[in-house]
Length: 109
Image (cartoon, rainbow, N blue to C red; front, side, top):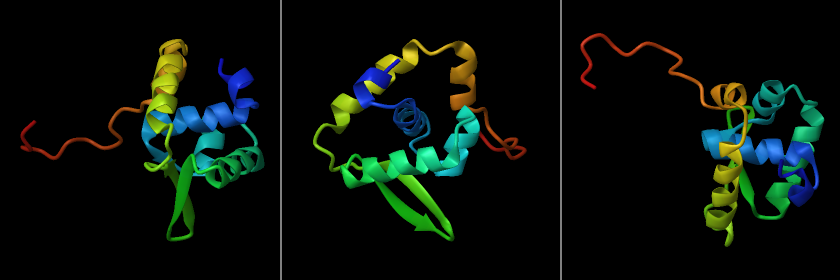
């Protein structure tokens, strides 16, 4: 949907993923969308060079997140949120997973 604006479908996928989950690593993004890992890595590197995202190492894994200092971050996130409204429900369900483990017994809501 936003491919004409962002230049590539993989860049759109990476940005949509980060909007939905706030952070992620390239393999996770590539597996979710069934895309080539190197293509996602290239797009994330370009976004990092442009200051849109930043990365940090957690062990041997490089995690990417939106750069809070990016001047157009609020506008970009608003555009991505609007685009997510038009995504199919099945795609949204994959982007926004349920809890991965059960709540501790007796823990208040």
